[in-house]
Length: 320
Ligand code: RIB
Ligand code: CA
Image (cartoon, rainbow, N blue to C red; front, top):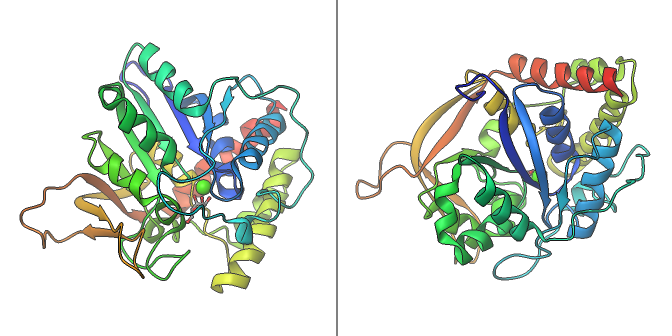
């Protein structure tokens, strides 16, 4: 939702582009309701260096290389590094050719960039996370007081139902469960957009056709991304259309009615041999000693979602 003053909501986006992260970046850039202050990158869909380059290429595509990019974590707070190239390809954003960046990432790392930007902001900021939570997990561990400078964290991750990277764990939470645990215990207001929600955000053929029909490179590039992403989802998980996860977080900030939420206690499994990274979402208060620590997305108005995404792509494309 835009600020009470009616101006665009300033946001920071921490991501691992990634095809759906790329669409989230374009949704933010093409929507007057939010102002993207900066992008921080993380390992996840690909190695962090590739995620950084991909973020920069998406900004170049949008003609918005003025947005600063700060490179973040190459691996999780604890344990092995999981990568999602099996979904997103060798580059992490395989498919159509993209413009090469003409500027460099900022010299400071993601954690320093987040700390400085949050500290210098005149009011607490909204942080959107669409990859592993590592950068915020490290920041909140090293500087717990920064929690007071974060208005809310809206993250794509976890699920109230099954996982994807493992049968029970969604990729982002599997990649760094300790970081999500830090965030859930931080006291910062959290909104969780899990697979149960994002599997309602399917880029069906009519949606892809609308992207492909746009008279500009932004729309046609997104259509091609959906082609690659859709092939991965059909090959691995037998989806007939790809769930475009990450833009759901941005859409939630643009339109309060696009998602239905429920306050719930959420925990993340850290130790289970088969269940590490699984989010346990107590929708029906079965743990009476635990209070809700997150607002959990349950239902998407898919038509409103795609109208938001496609309108943003058209605005961006018309301006490039
Ligand atoms: O499980 C889906 C999530 O993992 C999305 O954010 C996708 O981009 C990957 O990061
Ligand atoms: Ca992502």
